Length: 288
Ligand code: ACO
Ligand code: ZN
Image (cartoon, rainbow, N blue to C red):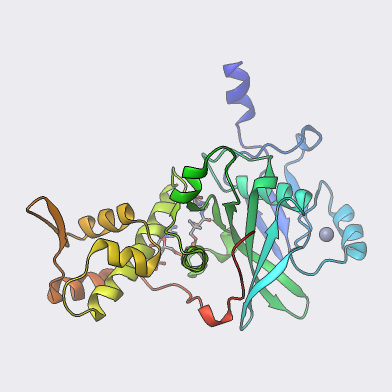
């Protein structure tokens, strides 16, 4: 059995075509067996149905009437739009998105049970339609685990498609997940484990957000206050500030010591801020 498992985990699909991009894949993804013999897959960039041959895709594009992800547009600013797709209402789309995402996600188990997820799909829109840039998923509820939803993971999986990476979209998606948490009145944290790139992106985001606040804020501020302002979980704030050596331990308590010179040094070293989420353009109420 083990051997079989190892064998099937070998990367299967080498490249995919999606919209105007041909993309080399990174990891194995468990497509249905009838796709086992294909090296290339052709995706409809709107409904995410996938096909083995280019002609099939061309035929499909003539009759597919989607021009954006199937769901509610909850954010639009300039050419950027975010769509909320309910996995329960759009099972096939959700499954297709998971197959696609797994090609770039190493250790994540693929959830076939897309019923439990909301997918937030970020698009760049033009007159041909809304082209997917990346997405994150979020669990709607965990059965039997009231406590968990209080603790509240605010993100399950995050992906920026390779042609769009390193342009600030990842930090945009992360920022968006925290804006949703703020609207829910909860703090949030991503599901673990994080990939290397996921960790880098989160660290970058946390660092930038916290430094900006500390820089502006006069006087003392506690981790709890920072958490209330940002919806970032206290543990993640503590770990970030510890890594920046901005925490001292006094009389059994963690105290933030934000020396202005140290802050400036860190701010210079911190990466670009990423694309901003304009909260006034977010029209959303928590899932009921
Ligand atoms: N090399 C070094 N640093 C990197 C790299 C890289 N290739 N990619 C991102 N980073 C770091 C940088 O610090 C970067 O900030 P900077 O450009 O200001 O220096 C920061 O991460 C984020 O950059 P963004 O442009 O905002 O992020 P991007 O759009 O590239 O998306 C993401 C980041 C989503 C992690 C992307 O790399 C990806 O999809 N990877 C594959 C899937 C994955 O690993 N997802 C996370 C799994 S964990 C989870 O899902 C809970
Ligand atoms: Zn289609």
